[in-house]
Image (cartoon, rainbow, N blue to C red; front, side, top):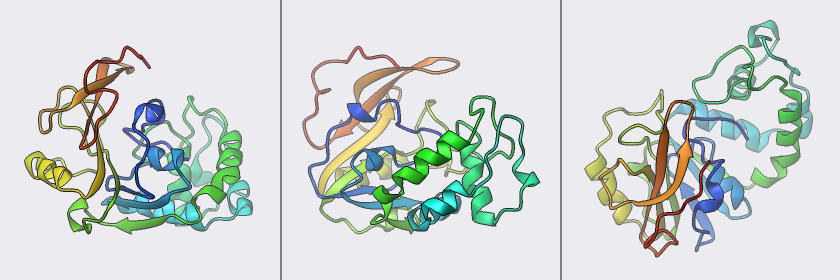
Length: 229
């Protein structure tokens, strides 16, 4: 519903389908995996308060709330409108194509009206979702599909508001200990779990290969896919 660094929008269809009725995303961001399987029991968790604030706003917003927001075009500034704090936070993600909220509409967005209409039409999908502000370490180890997309160890996507000193050894042990199905996202430069190449990604500056680790068999255990995005 909004843009954020590391969004899996282009490759979300490549990931395994959930084996459990509940999906937990401990590094929620824009929650593209949960949006794909929105009918499930969803729990979004993130340490960045703005992410949780925006998801709570969307979960409780009406179509009228979203459609009543200003229709902005390239060059328009959020500061020119009388908005609440949470509306500013939300629009900060809408007017750009990645994370770190900006105030001026990006040339890549051009017009926010179609985006707002699409979001308004999707609100019914997330009414039942739950959120939690906090660290992955604080979560109960319950039976679920765990979709884990942390800040990458080397390159790939970078989170402005993440913990740059993440302990990947500790995170690996935590991922391996989850009950249920665990799906971990990374790229092939990472070595904190035995990741398998999944799909090539062509970024603005360079190409990377998305990788996956799971405690269940996946389509990527034996061969590297040749898909490119």
